[in-house]
Every structure is written in C-alpha cells, then in structure tokens.
Image (cartoon, rainbow, N blue to C red; front, top):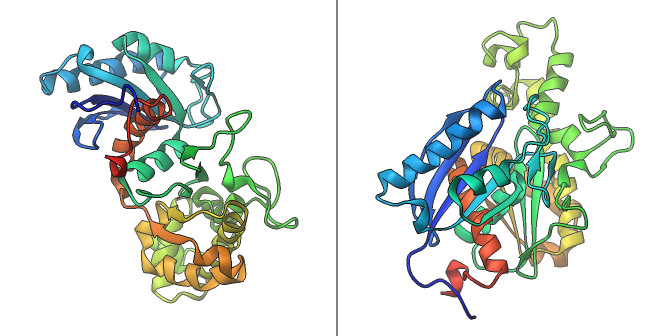
Length: 336
C-alpha cells in the first residue's frame, strides 16, 4: 500500500454540537493528547469559529507542535449539512445557516480537512478504536436525543447517493405511530428517540406531579427525560415499566430489521445502551430474535459502545483517518 503512514502522525479533530464544539488533538494510532471545549450555545458562527481555530492552535502549542506537524483534520457535525460543499445548517443551531465550517477550519490551519455527519463520525470512531475493531461490516447506532446510524460495508463507510445513508432513525416501523419530529409518521425515532420519548411523557404525565417519573425529574414536568424514565422503571413504577418495555421492544424491532437488511457481523449501540447497561440490553436482546432471521442474528455480535462518553474525542479524528484510509494513506489498527 504505497504512501501509508508509518511515522507518528498527528490529527486534529472537531466534534461539533449544539452547545459546544470540542477540538481534540490525537495521533493516528488513537492516542488522545488533549481536548478543549468551546461554548456554542446560542452563539453566532462569526463569534465561535475564530475561537474554535484558536482552541485547536492552543492544543498544538501545548503539545509542542504546530499546524505544520498535522497530517489531516477531521470534522464531525450535526445535520442538515451539505457534505460536498462542507457547510452545515443544524436545526438546533438557529443562526448557523450554510456555514462553510470545513473551509474555514481548513483555511485556519492550511491542512487537508475531511468532513462528515456526527453519526458517521461516531461509527468511524467505534470502528477504528472501539467496539467495531476488526470487522468489515458493521452498523453503529446512536440511541440518544435522536437516533442516527453509520454503516460500514465491505470495509468502507456507506454514504449514499446524496450522503444521507445511515438515517436509521427515520425508517417507518408503524404506519399508525406518532408523528416524528422529522415530519413523517411512525419513525423508529418517534418511538425511541430521547426527545420524542420525553415529549410523549410530558403529554401523558401533565397534571400528575406525584408521578414517579416526574419526581425523578425533580418535580418539573419540563425536565422529564429518558433518565427519569429509567430511574422510575428501576423503582418498579407501573407506567415507567410499561413504557421502558415498549422502548426495548421497538428498538429490537428496528434493529432486527437492520440486521436482516445489512447482514452485519457487528452492531454497536451507543448512549442508551452503555448508560443503562443490562437494564436495557437484557430485555432488548430477549426481543431481538422475533425480528430477524436466526442466520443473520447468529452471524452478528451485538456490542455496546466501548468509547462511551469519550466518543466525541475520537469522532473528528476518525473522520480524518477515514479520509486518509480511503486514499490509501493509513491502515486500520488491526492491519498493522
């Protein structure tokens, strides 16, 4: 493989979110050298982006490096986005419309820069450095505020004709289901996404301050979320137990469908799976055989994210490494 990196190579990654942007400095073999957090809540891009570049420069200086020492830069960001153009217009970042973040950061460091959505970035991070290592076919799912996915097939990230492959949260699993925040009805995310579940509970528990779920939210119905539901379900509250069981079953329904469609050798589950542990995984795995063939399930290992809360530190770096990997300039850790 001509041009593959053998010397120590430094990568700068950027994890973009609605409340923060986190520059992270690491190496091509997965060593994290440092990270910083830039506040992004209710701020305009013209104010934030210079601080983002400065934060990256500070990381380099603290490591005794400069931009000249970087091999590549990677950015993982929420959609909607235009990947070929390198722009983002995230729904939860109201003043960020068609922001050319890729070009801005590339210009700031004068280094080759790669760009992808946050779910794909998480999938790449788990593939290279987490629970996806060593496989050629993998599905990664973020089970968080929303449900996103990243698909690895035949040793490459699947992006699709318009770079929208992996939108697993928006497959319809029930025609009579609730309206999704995306505008369709009955989406997987409408049943299991953290935001959608919170909205459902806030409707169903309105006027019930004595509800166990509401109490676990500090008594404020507006603060009811998946964590409050989990705590109430662990306490044995009837409403919470039933809803938690439904969520586990609906996750199994959707993921079983993905297993049959993609025939992956590994499925890696994020956020909810590692946060709730066996309280989620045990019932989920019990339901799973009802929704996919025995042959596809037998060939698939279902794993929990190994990177957990640290996945953001690896995600931007992994986007850069995937770009280098596709160019034939980097080998995955298990190939060395």
